[in-house]
Length: 262
Image: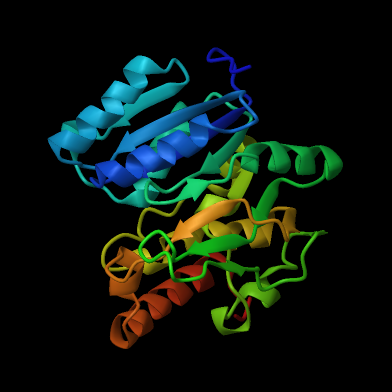
């Protein structure tokens, strides 16, 4: 049963418009077989329609919390996730982007893995790249992470597997769950990775976790990552932007971890 006073897991979903997709994301959390969670919806500057939808969910469900930035500003996904984490009551933090969904047993399976792997601070699972939402004739694809799965990695061990990205796929935030204590210890998401550097907004946190935490890589895939041509990721992925953003990331990484070669 969900315990709004002391949830075990805090799910954080930043959103910027796209009310239909936000509804699908929220419903996929409400459909979880594991129910001791809270869902924190962080408004990152949405228009009225989507804001009203999120507020309505928070009014109808005790486990759903609504929050927004001062003056309803658009501060980016990293700042929004950090805002949600500050409000979180759970021992664990899970992230779900507003255009993605979870399969019903996602939280249950990941919490079970923490029980089996008590030394793990972070669990990263594979993702299902979701093409069929747009065209039912397209096949979805399970994308496994670029490191051998179903095992734990000590701090510093994963970085050689997952960087550079050409050697292996990094996890999607939608497939990551970690202890709140670990999130706070490494400093959360790096808010400098916003436009035009948003392509690597996840990698700031992930690289800190690879370097400073014990991470379990799971071959399970209980999340659906919506693939769309006009997404922020797609727009930022053209060759010129990619080079600029990658260099920005390397400069940041080298300043934090001098002497570590990616």
